Length: 126
Image (cartoon, rainbow, N blue to C red; front, side, top):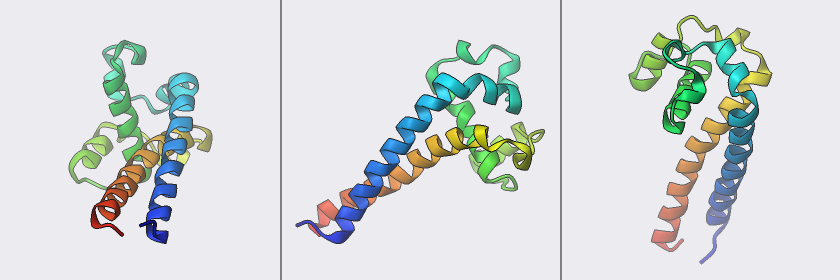
């Protein structure tokens, strides 16, 4: 029942979970203020970051993620993030502010893919 592909998918899923958890703790508890002062999301003109519910805070961080990783894209949510954050030059954002955002959302997206692969392998009995 256990194949190397299943072991690899499970290991990747666990790694993504750990990366996402550590990056999320650093991001939301230690670096959020510093990141928001540097990247200046337009939503923060209306109310402070802590005044938004966690879902909106995560969406703001997702916009930062899209701007940092896909600065030239104009497609869908990524394009909207690039329009909102056109004033941010991703090359000038310090690495100490990039890694929690990229680790959190990168771990989430890659973890979702790993979980789908793992479910498919379990379903197929591989």
